[in-house]
Amino acid sequence: MLLGGNGQLRPSIFAEMSALAVATGAINLGQGFPDEDGPTEVLEAAQKAIRDGVNQYPPGRGMPVLLDAISAHQERFYDLTWDPGTEVLVTAGATEALAATILALTSEGDEVVTFEPFYDSYGAVIALAGARHVTVPLRAPAFQPDHDDLRNAITNQTRLIIVNDPHNPTGSVFDRETLELIVELAHVHHCLIVTDEVYEHLTFGHEHIPIATIPGARERTISISSGGKTFNTTGWKVGWITAPAELLSAILAVKQFLTYVNGAPFQPAIAVGLGLPDTYFHQAAGVLQGKRDLLAAGLARVGFEITHPQGGYFIVADAAPLGFANAAELCRKLPALAGVVAVPVSAFVHDDHANEYASLVRFAYCKKMESLEQASTKLLALSR
Image (cartoon, rainbow, N blue to C red; front, side, top):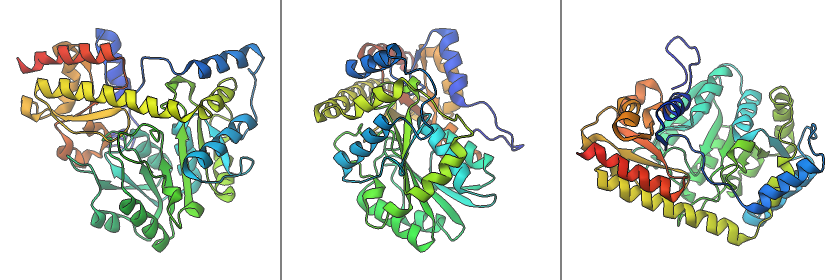
């Protein structure tokens, strides 16, 4: 976790593991960024914007061309209608969107519910806001929430329920029954729902259902996504929020003091991406599924006990069958042992829950096929 025992923020596991990858030359399957560029149309649109002088501050809410594209995307894929002038906001990636939302909508002592394991920035920003972080466990191998756990976690003290779907790091996709229960509990306890949907188009035979489409959810849901994962442009940091105007205005009031604005030439490029034909989105998911299957087979040959992610960039593997009970120790040794970098799942949980996930490792498969093949071969050193 990012919060130490003294309440101070500490460096993330990603910084540590990425530094190890650089220092050792190991294949980096720890951090979730692709090593291949995205669609040519999107890259060329950014280049054209730079040549055309789109290099200064964009409007605070985002460039109209992208606001319109986000609104059109939500209607095209999910039949959700959002006013691009009042209900859509461009952010510096989904991470800033989450930070601005949590800081804007919580006060000291409020409770924020997330699933656990959780994307590490959730815990950090909840702590910065002075709120209390309450978690609902996702347990191997299915990594689906127990509904009684949800009912017990969400109370009248809950201010926000954060739903990361498809889920990082487990790759689970939540079913309609679970989403309906979340909406029901949000109504009962008068709280808001925040969704992190950055892997929305990267699912494998499982439908992603935006929670805002569930009856009764739209008026209390802040939906967050980004172009980085969908278009292999994680370094551009272009994300967005769709939400009712009153909630969005409160978030904008905080966001303006974080990055203010960002990514002027990348905003029209992401707008081009959002308008690509359906075949692009289907193909992107299909290619990623092939990479998932390649790495899964390689990890199984090594002797890991693997799960089968339903979406996203990551696969969770249990190192216990290989004799490694502590995945954090294994990951620090892995570059020297096998020339590969990975991340322990315990980095995504509270310290007092770490034992339950102690032997689990997260590997990223959003890499070139040859990189995954090489990593699978190198990892065989663990089974000798």
